[in-house]
Image (cartoon, rainbow, N blue to C red; front, top):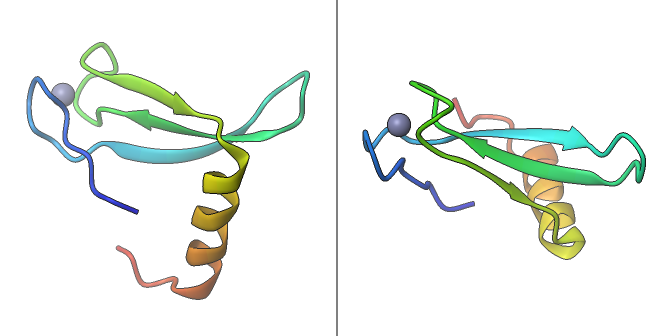
Length: 63
Ligand SMILES: [Zn+2]
């Protein structure tokens, strides 16, 4: 997964996995670690999410 920087403070965005309450589908949330008002985004493309999940399961040394 590409690192994405906050457009305001240039911090690398935190990537969080979450699940939709009603749909129960996983999605990815990108949020600025310094201030959630800076940047917040959601990815709900299931193909992409599955790919990210697989990569996370493979290599756990991301830091
Ligand atoms: Zn920021």
